[in-house]
Amino acid sequence: MKKLTRRDLLRTLSLSALSALISGRCGDEKAFEFTLHCLNPEKGHQKILHAFCDAVIPGRNSDPEGSPGAVDVCSLNLLYDDSFMFKKIAPLIAEMIDRKATRIYRTSFWNLSLEKREKVIKEVLEEFPLLILVIKLVKSAFYAGGFSTEGLEYMGYPGSNSGYFNDPQFSFRKPVSREKTKDGNMP
Image 1: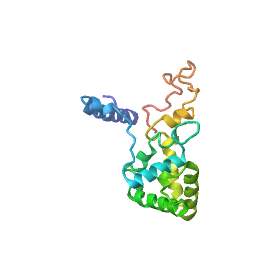
Image 2: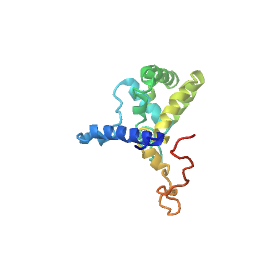
Image 3: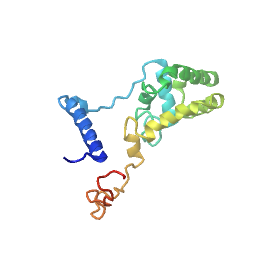
Image 4: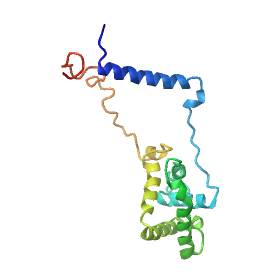
């Protein structure tokens, strides 16, 4: 009888978990489909945060070159994702931004031009430095491709370097070392 090594055990457990996961979803064709639906700003605070996202990384509607921005990659979805606590304080942050815009320009943040929105955000940042975390969250949707790869594609990612994938001298199908132990376990 062959002894079961630690590597064989881990390989077997991984494959069985993967096959159980796949077999449970095979009948459901929609399980593997993903469609991107950006949130449309409906409520007042969603409109303000939509304008906020557009001011952080200007998108097609406000960028002079028409390049994609935070709104185009669905950053509002990330702000209202259940995984983040921000969803609970979103109305408060939006109200703070809108009140500052109303105090300075006598109109809602939503109605301001891009330059005026940026000035309002700078002033709110001086009073409330933690707003930088919200800005980073918005930027992560664009730069990390949280909901859409449009921002990554705009920046040229993935680049032309495909690594060693097709290089015949560097194949992952060839062993790069030989086993020094008898059964795969340390003595």
